[in-house]
Image 1 (cartoon, rainbow, N blue to C red):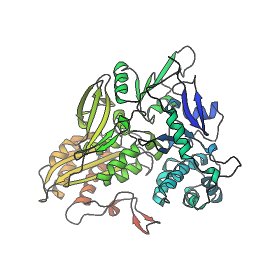
Image 2 (cartoon, helix red, strand yellow):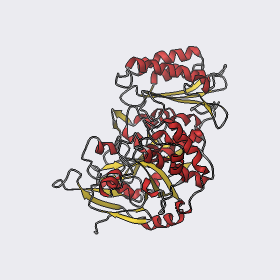
Image 3 (cartoon, rainbow, N blue to C red):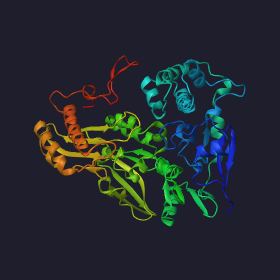
Image 4 (tube, rainbow, N blue to C red):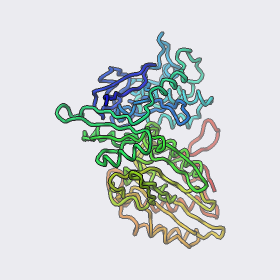
Length: 518
C-alpha cells in the first residue's frame, strides 16, 4: 500500500505533509515547520485563543463551513481533506488589510499584539459567516465569539468596537473568499475510503510509528474499533490534545471520528433528537436548544466557540469528567446512549453509563454511536445552572439540572435532578427526586428535597470550591429552580440571575439565561 500523506488546502493550493508525528499539532507545524509565526502559542491547552485559526470543511450538502479552532491542540492529520486559514492569509497580495484587520487598527484594538492574531481569526470567521447570512451580529453574538480569546492589556472595549464596525468597511475585491473554488478543491481532496497516515513516534527515533485512521463510513469505523480495541478514539482533541501538549503521553494509534458521516448526523423524529457522537458541541447544543431553550446559558458558557466547534457531545460523554457540563442536563432529560461494537448495537440509559471516576460501561471495542434525547413534554419544567468563578470559559464548581413533570393539579408526576461537581461522576439525586415525586410543587416539598441532597452527595473540597460550599450551592439551586417555576408568582430569570445586563442592541434588560419559557 502506498504511504498516504496529509493533504489540505492552504493559500489556494494543496499542501502535502509526511514524516511528522501523528500527534504533531497544527500550531507546531505552522510555527516550527512553515515558520508561519503569526499564529501564537500561549497556553497550549485551548484556553487563551492566541493560536486561533480557521478550518474550512464541507458540510453534508457539500457547502463550505468555516470554524474557528485552537491550533495548539488540533493534531495535524485531522486537517486532511480540509482547508486551513491563518492570519497571514487575510492580507491581499498588494498588502491591503482585510476589513477585520483594518477595523482593529482604526479602533486601537491592539497594544502588545500577542493576542491580536487570535482575535483577528475569531472575528474573521464571524465576518465570513455573517457575510453568507447577510446580517450584522448583535453585541451579544460578538461577545460570545470573543469568549475564547483572552487579552491582558488592550481591554475588550476597542476590540468589540472593531467587531461592530468591521462590516462598515468596503471589502477589497481580492480579500473576498472564493467559496466556489475552495469547495471544488475540497471535493477533490475527499477520500473514498479510510485515510491511513503513519508517522514517527513523537518521542523520537527508536520508538517506531503510530497510525492515524480516519474512516469514512460507520461500518469502516466499527470494524476498525473492533479490530483495534487498544487504539484510542479521537474526536475534537479538546481533551486528548492536552494529553500530548501537557502530559507528553504516548497516545499510540488513533481512530478519528470526524470524517464519519453517520457519526456527524443529527436527526429528529416525534420521540427523540438523535445526535451522532461526532456532532460538534456547537451544533448539538443548537439542536437541543430548539426544544429546550433553557439550555441557552449553559450553551454559551460551555468552554468557548473554538472548543465547541471542535469538541463533540459524544466525546464529552465518553470522557466522563465529574464536572462535564453536558451531563447534568442530559441526565435530567433521561438521555439514552446508542452503543455499538462491530455489528452489535445496544441502547443504555446515560444514568447507567458511568461506573466510577472516569470509568464507564463500554465493552472492549465498543463506542458511542449516538445520543438520544427525548422530545419535550408539554408538562415539563426544566432548568439548568452553572456555577463557576468566571462567567466565560471556566470549569464548573457545580452544574445542576432539574426536570419536573407537573400536572395541571400541581402534583409532581416525575422528578429528575442531576448534578456535576458533587460526586466522582455526574449523578442523579435519587433521594431528592423521591422527596418530590407525588408531592405538590410547593415550598414544603422543595425544602424536603433540599435536605435530601445530603443523602445523595458527599462532595469533595478542591481548588474550585469547598465541600460545604458545593452542598450549599446545590441546595440553593434547587430553591432557585422553584422560585422560577412555581405556580404562584414565579420570578423571571432576570430577577435571580447575577449576570443581568443592559442590551445595547435591544435597548432593554437582558440576561445570559434564556427567557422564561413556562
